Each structure stands twice: as C-alpha cells, then as structure tokens.
Length: 198
Image 1 (cartoon, one colour):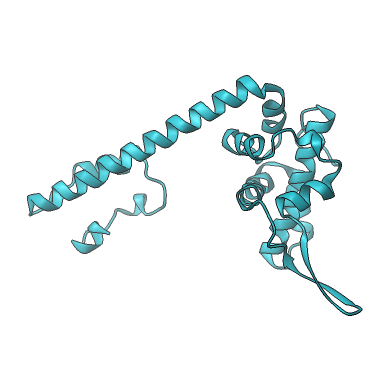
Image 2: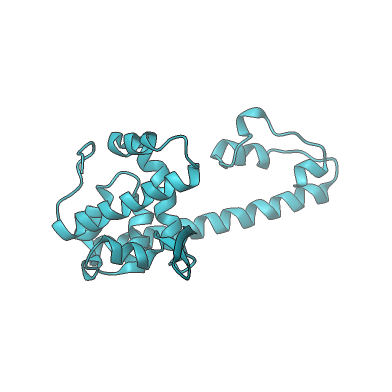
C-alpha cells in the first residue's frame, strides 16, 4: 500500500504473495525522499517480523506437543499426501481421537463435508454443502486436497475423472476422499502409501 502511494513498482520477481528474505531485504534497503516515509515502512516491517516470528514459534510448539502426546496418530496423518505438520496438528487438536467416529458418514457430518438437503413435502434435493460444520476443519481438508492432487497420482486421477464439473464441487469430493483416507489410516494404524488405490 505504501509503495503504491509513492508510485513505487515492485520488481517482477517479487510480484506474488510470498514475502521471501530477498524481498524483505529489498524493502529494508528502500530509500525515500522523506525520512518519515522510511520510518513508517521500517515500523511496518518490524511489526511484520514480530508477527511472522510469533507464528513460527507457536507452530513449532504445536508440532512439538503433537509429536510428544499424539506421536503415532501425528505420524500416521503425516503419511497422507496433502497433510503437513500444521494440518495434522489442527486435525488432532480439533478432533481429538478419530477412533471415536464409527464411520466416514459420522465424521463427514461432524466436519461438514456432506450435502445440505432441502425437503418440501415429497420432494427432496441437495443444495450445496451443509452450513453446519467445523469450518476451520473443513477448510483444512479443502486446502489439503489441492496439495494432495499435486502429489498423489490416485487423487490426481480422481480429480481428473470429475473434470468438466464445477471446480469447487470437485475439490469438495476430493476433500471427502481425503477425510475418508484420514479415518482409515487412524483406524487401521497403517501409514498411507502413495499411489495405492483404495
């Protein structure tokens, strides 16, 4: 915002959402005509670095806690493509012991990866995803699904099989499959093997 105000265009290599160390260095080295503009940017960078470090510290503590207290389940979840350390911690923190869910329908209903039904008299139709959901968990699985279709050929094939439909509804199908896979590895206590057809 401040760069736009002063008419400064970012170099093309930095034109993305990722604030690399090189980009931060470029901002630190920036020279302004007015010293107050530089002071303002320096203040913003100090705040950004504080928040960034705080986020890293909390993430490290959370992963350490899960590795100590939920080691087996944490490692089982990490074996699934798309589920990294933070998502695995989020699943364990939000759901606790997944073994308490009887089946995938039960778990999908709790997370909110089920269709919403509209009923009127004898007619019944689905109208998208249910509004009743653990929204944070649902977003974890939807985001993890994008990574899963890049790294697992089975998920990639499943995604391609549905191409031509609405992208959002396809990724929800993939998220539900990922959720099913999550429950399966925890219940069987067998790590997931990439490329194995379920």
